[in-house]
Length: 454
Image (cartoon, rainbow, N blue to C red; front, side, top):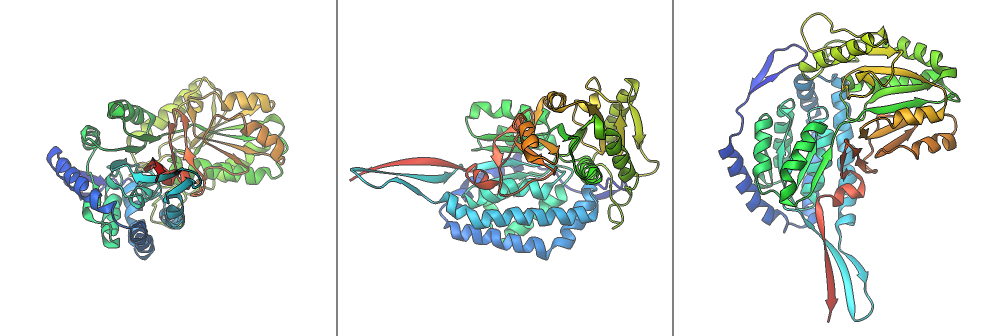
């Protein structure tokens, strides 16, 4: 398997993929290892994760450079991802023991009652390439703390990062028979679906997530899916700082080259402030510097996958044919690398794919609306339900909109944000189940009820 640098299209390294035989061997290793790991005191398990947390900081330069080379995000964004991952790990370190402790529900009377939390067993963590540290730690950290063994499949576009994660976990004291990587393309992931695992946790596309859910349904084990989105941002006419709203929206669209499940993918602006917002957005968009992601001056690096260039071009062409106007970008730059210009489309509507299908790139349509009711109708006109953002001076007015959003997360005067203290969850085609917060700690354990009469 060849690891390609998306900025240069050169081969970084060739790696041997797992086979059905090596996958089976690793599974048997994990099955045996989990039994001992769950008997380890939780404070010792947390201590290993604390060491891993420290190692991420110690090795941050190598980790950030590897991540940038293999998936293309600007170097500073790779450092940002590592910092964000450490922040989430810190939450798990500080809170897991509290939320996994046994709970005495009834302590008086003839029958006493308590709840204890036991690990699921050996779980699959089929992870994503766009934020391999962030989406990875959401799963494998609380899973390990909870006493599970983890069969971790990094994306084929973030394989080297996955191998770094494994090496540092081992160095931190996580036993090799409690964490194994499955290396390869989708056919290797398919092998995990055939194993009698005790849970499946996937981050990726709706299409693949639906396939996984259907494939493992008969196993009757937990299956959580963190899938894509078509996340809207709405700018009301009372917004106090139109330039800041435009700058925030732009960052929400183009950060990580738009390759975020919660990226802003469509913008609705009230007609009274529409022109001012569009002008401010385009002005900022034209300042974006595309280039070598290892260069500190670069704002936008390449896309991680070459085929996404053609996909985004097709979305832009479809919109233009149906009457949209390109105010900025819209093209694939000449030269090497999987680049795509940050793109602004106006005169858009929901007949266009760019307003209804997930883009996963630095492309956005900006649509004019007359009032809150029209904005709500358009924001809800989607099969996805991950996040929705509202910019307004009034929280009460914004809250009235946010309450009607069928999404796992809503934002007021911010966007494209994830917090370790809040649950991260999707609705509809954006998936189901929750990671992060105390709910994300308990996602990897199962409750057992004790009725005690003595």
